[in-house]
Length: 320
Image 1 (cartoon, rainbow, N blue to C red):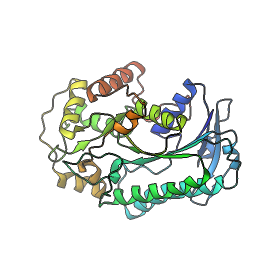
Image 2: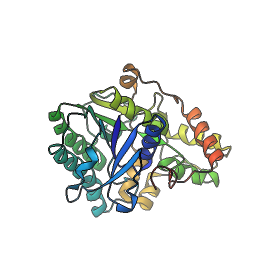
Image 3: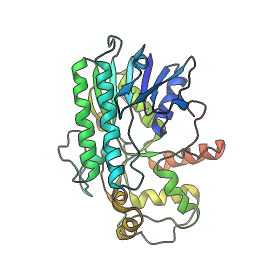
Image 4: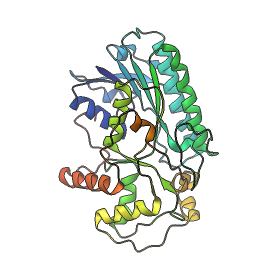
């Protein structure tokens, strides 16, 4: 088995690459940075530029699975220009892959798995979202994820399994939201956001990587929530982080107006609430290693302390 990954240099992509290598699976990956084109027996980089549609077709040679994670981070201030980049980076990546697949031998490809996000679900403190929910959040993120998923649909014409994993809050000390949440708590300045009642559908980074490979290897079709079995409120999450760090919480919750002044429209992601379920993927036979946020945090901080790698630049062993 060989996996072709887009977005392999990111947080989730690096974890999937490491998991593939642990299982003896070779990885091809597409990168827009020629300086990141590693080449060895188990890892081979190829250049692409989704903005122009350029792609090295050799990346598909021997690949049985394609995992698409490409897309600009949403964790930067949303200027008008950057919002356009968030959208175009996702759609252009899929358009470029689709165009390339029309030109290559697809006989060995069995599955295509694309990242998506639970941000498509409407903001709600009471709803519980399974994959067949019909509503779309009336926000920039809701619109982007809806367009992103629609761009995956044309891949159905190729005959291999096509699936989308709607990712929630990824728990990792190597990047993403958790280090940003941890930093103020370490310095006794942590607090929940707004009412703190908004739901956080989280997943341990290792469970998410395993889920992508599980969906690919089992040729699952359709949409799956990339979240753990037990969502928590923002209040609960902040308290569990503080408990894991053995730090007290002194400050009152941070008002929405304060974060909007600091972060602009991007602050929406701190206050939106999507409680999503994992029943569908579990019914397919997937088993979570981390079902509760407390055990997930304990594992992450224990491993972080052991390896001293609580740094987004980690994983240089695989892709620098």
